[in-house]
Image (cartoon, rainbow, N blue to C red; front, side):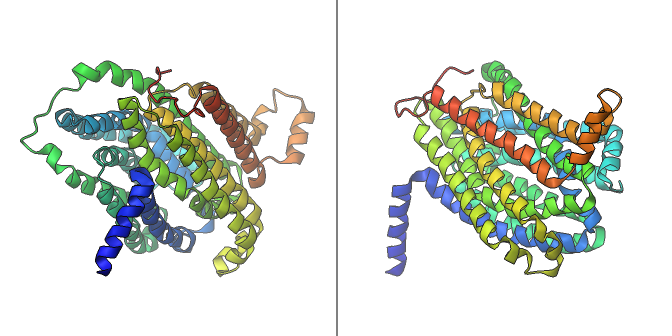
Length: 461
C-alpha cells in the first residue's frame, strides 16, 4: 500500500515537472551527495596531505591538463552534438561508428599529447613551483579522461539513460574518496590526480557498458562522414574557438593566482573555491540535462525558450542563496576546524567567488543553449571579452615586464597599488563575468528569446 502510494506520488511529481526538471532533480540529488564527499576531500583530506605551499598548484595543474587536451576536447565536444542527433533519430549505425572513431582518435591524441607535453610542461612546473616527478603522465591522462567522459555521457543523455547517469554520479564521489584515502598519504599531488582520474575512467567504462547494445553485431556501423562530414566541420570550427577561449580563461585565472600571488593566497583561493563550487552545483545539473533536450528540440524545430529562462533563473537563484549563507555563516564555518583558521580573513572573497560562479553558470546556460542549437553568434562578444580579460589579468599582474617600455612613474604606481593580490584578481574576474552576463541578456532579448513563439530552429550564425 505504502509502495503504491509513493509510486503514484512519484508519477504525479514527474508529470508536473516534466522530464527535464525531474531528471535535473535526480541528478541534483546525486550531485549533492557527491558534493558532500567532495567537500570532505577538498576541504579536509587534500589540505591534510598536500602542504600549504603546494596546495594552490592543484587547480592550475588540472587546467594545464585540460589545455593539453584541447584538440581532443574540441573533437569530442563536436561529436557529442552529433552523438545526441543520431541517438535522437535512432541512427544507431552512425552512432556506433562515431563512438568507435572517438576511441581510436583518443589513443592517437594521447600519444601526441605525451610527446608535446615533454616540450612545454617543464616551464609550466617552474612557474607553478612544483616538482615534476610522475606528474606529466598523470596530468596528460587527466586531460584525456576529462575530455572523453562527456562523449560517453552525451550518448547516454541522447538515449535518455538518466538512471544510469545518476547511478554513475552517485558512485563516483565515494570511489574518488577511497582512491584518495590510499594515494594522498603516499604521493601528495600525484595521489590527488590519481584520485581524479580513477572515477572518470570508471565512468567511461560504465557508460560503455550502458551503450553495449549499440556495439552489438546486429547493428552495422554506417558512415556518418558522407552525410554529415560538412556539418561536422562547420560545427567544429566555431565550437573549437569556444572551447579554446573558455579553457584559456580558466587556465589564465588559476595560473595567475598561483604564478603571481604568494603561496598562502593561492592556497586560500583553493580553499574558498571548494566552497564556492557548491553554489554552481544546481546550474551544473541543469546544464547536464538541458543540452540533449535543447538539441533534440532544435532537430525537431520546436521552441525551447521557456526552459532556457527557467534554467538561467534557477541556477542563478540557487547560487545566490548559497552566497547569502556563506555571507552570514562563513566566519563560523572557517572556525570549525583548526586547519581552516588561517583562511578566515578570506570570507568576503569566498562570498564574491560564489556570486561569480552563480552568475557565470547562469550565463553558461544560455551559451549551452546556443551551442546545442548550433548557433555561435555569442562568440563575437564572448570571445573578445575573454581575450581582453586574459591579456589584462596576466599583463597587470606581470607589470614588471613592461618597465622598459612605459614611464617609471606608472611602474611605481602599480607597485604601490599591488595588483598581485587575491581580492583584485577576483574583482577583475567578477567585472568580466558581469559584463559577459549583461551581454548575454542583451543578446537573448535582441534575438527574441523572450517571445514564446520564438523557435529554436533559427539559421546558424
